[in-house]
Image (cartoon, rainbow, N blue to C red; front, side):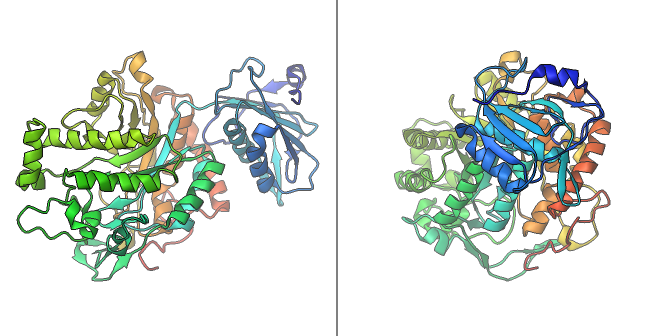
Length: 534
């Protein structure tokens, strides 16, 4: 193993804690060598221990070749100096002479060190210069996520791949991919071809700026399994885990329109269609053996593609109306001795969890999965009320905090043009409020705090029609959430006045990548082509 930079040298070189080079998210600690000349790392020679080859390749791809600096990626099994890294932690040590060492236990840690090093680099005349010093860093939370809804509108593979790069830039490590909805089924299932032949298409959509008016235009698309594999491969190289979501038992209108026998076909006026308007729809899977066999078939094709520990089943906003009207659903309740439809939902979720467990996956779902009783092994994604976090914690369940109050990026980012293309679902969520988010509820005990895996932002797509609108709604709020999830500072320690100047400097990095973020005056940074078909 290559030896680390001698700590004594760094001390002798007057390591000083002065103003940060505007890193986002903020590292655990950073100190730089006073009055030292910056190191030009463009084209640096990158060497690495074999276990860190992926991170090294990423760094080479960003820096090119032919420079003078040397960057060493070193695998460690013990503390670096007095700093104990974890599976995603790293230490960067650099000398004025041009040698830089990134030390980490894993390729993930080395990768995040590389991300920080690239952020350190100030671009001048096509060259990238970094201030020598020492950075020690590791994340606060293991789950640092963003959800994209492909069900209402199809975002497309090119933009998904681009978003993965942007998530990696902010040390986000979970991409939650919402793939099915009442308004569209977006993933190929070979055993059930009508899911895409029928379920991926709708006859019309609401008009932008007037959600109660139809555009009368056919709409639809889907991802092939090869597309999914490409996205997962890209994500894996960036140390991002893709968590797929297939909605059940509600938000299932597109699937039921494709195969009506999966729904409550014994109710009056049963006529399922792929939804052409927004809002909660009433078509819910029937609790039939045929339905559970279908769900198992879907899992059988998707689980080999997604290596994630978790599989998301939705579970939210499942209307009980059809179950109340269905003689078959009522017979299941009687057979299973269930007192109401909420317990029927719990029964449904429990059956699905057994299917997932048998295929080696853990179930995660929105907080409605607790209706009628919560499985002891399920993970709850809290979105409605923080009281559900307390319920899950009291029950001993793991939690991902995703509340509407702080993480719903489909809500307005603030000032925006009076233009129908900038329409949003409603509500306002300014970046200052995102930055003030504290994922651990105040009343949690120390043991309950350990149940909080982390947090994530949500990009529901009723009013997100393409990649330009997606980026406008996501950024720079993702930057703020990334720091909430990564940096070791609770809400009382977090300071908007300290963060905002770093953010403004960081936006120049986004400018270089042509990210279409929301500016303070409401205008998009790159393009106002935010509408469907533009």
